[in-house]
Structures are given as C-alpha cells and as structure tokens.
Image (cartoon, rainbow, N blue to C red; front, side):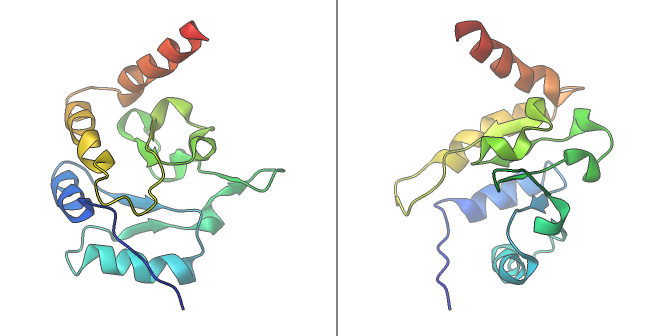
Length: 142
C-alpha cells in the first residue's frame, strides 16, 4: 500500500505539453509500481501511452540508473528528458532538463516554470544546441 500525490499543476502541464510533443514516460521505477501511477496521471486521455521502465535503464556500479535516450528516438536532436536526477541523463547530457524533486510543497511551480522552455524548444532544429548552452555556461563558470 502506498500513497501518491500529484505535484501542483501536473494536470495542466501534461495537457499543455502533450499538445506540443509526444510524451514518453521513462522511469527508473519498476513497471508494477509505475504503471498504475501513470494510468492515474493519464486519466484516460491516452497521452501517456509510451512507457519505459527500470528494465530499459542502465544500472551504474554505484546503483543509480541512467537512461539512454536513443531507445526513445534515434534522432536525439528531437528528444529532451525532464528529470530530477542529473545522473539519469548523464549518457545524453545535452538532452537533459533538470527539475527539482518535489516534496509536497503546495506552492511549487516548477512545472509551470518549464513551460516556456519546452514551448521554445519546439521551434529549434536541435534541442541539444539550446540545452547545451546551459551546460557550456555551467562549465565556463566552474
């Protein structure tokens, strides 16, 4: 038995972003746990039908999981991964969009904050060129 809570604005976020992109859930969770949660989030809309689970991840020696985005789409210029664990997009660093983990803060607006970024990425020929600017900027200051 477990309890699942929705991050604020998740329904609005999914409805909005599903109009822009094909959504793929790529989770390090086990299918048995994740499928019912994804079904609940999808709520019969049919927008979360593409799903990858822990068995599609690569486990690192330290026990954490990475996600090779090339199994989602061979053309990585068209793929981005929103994840609260930077290690999960280590293989495809220029495709990663970090988001803070959520811990029941009812005033959290992280999903709303992502909307302008995701909206603008629709109009670029290669998401890595835009997202890579953040990585280059980070390394330049370190």
